[in-house]
Image (cartoon, rainbow, N blue to C red; front, side, top):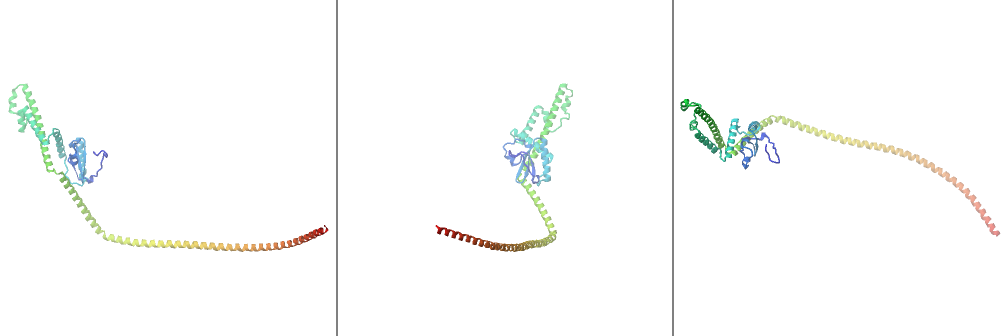
Length: 341
């Protein structure tokens, strides 16, 4: 497959192909100034709005590719173009080869064939007028002529000359028959080509046929689906009713689940509050017992401190009295000493 330079390969779906044509017939080939590949090695796959133009090298390869692709398209494609038989393919290939030779001589195919026939006729008439007249009247060279019968008594040189001329006449007759067959094939192909010159109209007709078949298939499919839908109508209604019931039950289950979750949340909160309140009561009782115990301890301590204070007061009063007495004695002593002085 010859693609552009950026992407050497292309992928196409043969299910979208509407036909195949042999030779450089599409506008893509026609726009080319010069085609490197010979015309008999070209063929094109036709799609809606585009073509895929291909070339294959070799007689056997192009035959296998074209006939094989044509068979696949007839099986999987959507077109209705007439298929080309192997004989028609060979005749068309011969036509393209003759056209290539004619173009090399700067002539069209019809003009080239006429000139070749005239040249062959002239060369025959120039070399052997008798054999040329025999070929133009389409008589056989194998039948012995009167001249050959009269020449039965000639010498060996004359016999050899006659055998040589007979062989040459046979070759010319075979060549003329071949050229005549090629000319008939070419004229037949030219008539077919003239009858189908409007390739766009053919493609349009093929596309319309494909679309009609597709629409027919779609209509049949629609009718079948409509019949099935009518048959399945009661079942669909019952199914819809069941689905609505299931949705209602599902909604009720969801509501019950949400209420259960909210009640479970409330229960957890109440349980937590109860546990917290029981903990507070236990803690308050223990705090109260501790406070009572500490109050008793503080009261006992106060009593001890009061007793110690009373004892300290008693001891302080005795000490103060003794100290006052000593101070008084010291004062008196000092007074007497002053008086003595």
